[in-house]
Image (cartoon, rainbow, N blue to C red; front, top):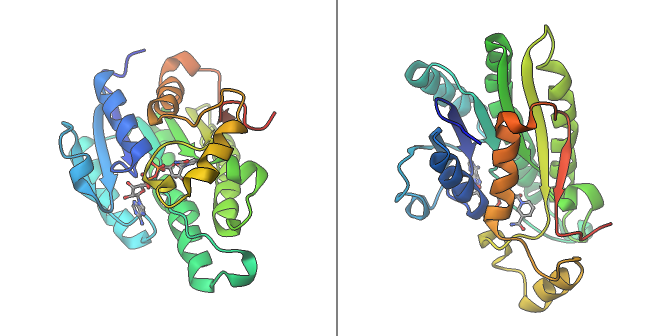
Length: 240
Ligand SMILES: NC(=O)c1ccc[n+]([C@@H]2O[C@H](COP(=O)([O-])OP(=O)(O)OC[C@H]3O[C@@H](n4cnc5c(N)ncnc54)[C@H](O)[C@@H]3O)[C@@H](O)[C@H]2O)c1
């Protein structure tokens, strides 16, 4: 696989999975633009361009994209990886908790893709990779906000796969639904529960970020040239 000459934009670049995607895409020759919101230290060692942005803020996204297009001229690959959780049983979940998670995960993905996707379509090619979750496919107790946002991402992926391929454009849009992956997002989950998640997979363990990044690389590259509108499970066989 080869991403030489490509410009990749990755949101959530400072997170466990986003950082690994940035590192891997850089290794395969892409110019990488990392969008982060916090924790710049986790990614400052990589030779990528970094921009601070809250993806849930529509006006900020527009301003940032305008700047990026003036600087780089085009985005070839977009990875929507920014995401948060704020868990509670539905009976205890506040409106603020619901809105915040949906704003970052779902609207944030929309905020960026509504700018990048149409330009890719005009250019005639591109690859968009949205990071959903196993929770978006199967639900999870205490995560109705997160599940709604991640199911929504699968719906948007399929819609964009249709829309951005109109007029014979070669834009592909796919989702990845990771299972439980060892990053900061799992930091607050008790070890006992993590062990249970691991034992529910066929492989008997949780994922490493590189195992998600490898699939993103495949979807970004021409190796996956006939895959669009797909949602790829990367969950160690957790739900068969
Ligand atoms: N770790 C898992 O088990 C797991 C499983 C399935 C899906 N995912 C998804 O993978 C993606 C990456 O998660 P991770 O595990 O690397 O988590 P992480 O917490 O390590 O990283 C999350 C990233 O999102 C960024 N972010 C948060 N709010 C933002 C905002 N308002 N604007 C811009 N960026 C913002 C953070 O700065 C960070 O870079 C997320 O979308 C997550 O939902 C993770």
